[in-house]
Amino acid sequence: MRGDVKISFFDHRFDEGIDEEMFFICFHTGFLSSSNWVVPLAEIDGAAKDEKHMVYSPQFRVEFIFVPEQRSKGIWRDLPLATESVLDEAQESSARLRAAQT
Image (cartoon, rainbow, N blue to C red):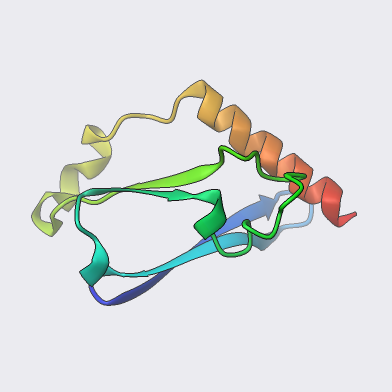
């Protein structure tokens, strides 16, 4: 991965069979200085506008872990699984997003 990158995050509505973009993050790989990058809520496009924290908690963040391309085949074995609290927070944020839109 090189150059300008946009990574979008979607909420899949199983009952309606649609994907809705929740937020996205844009960056240029030339500005990455380490293999770990944490993006706080204030810097996440589409989520930062939730100033009253109706959908995303103030501590919400996205963490990226970058690995060299030659290791990419085994990456999924080497990465830790999401903790239960991270999964719970993601589900709660998804539910708040749906409720805010209705």
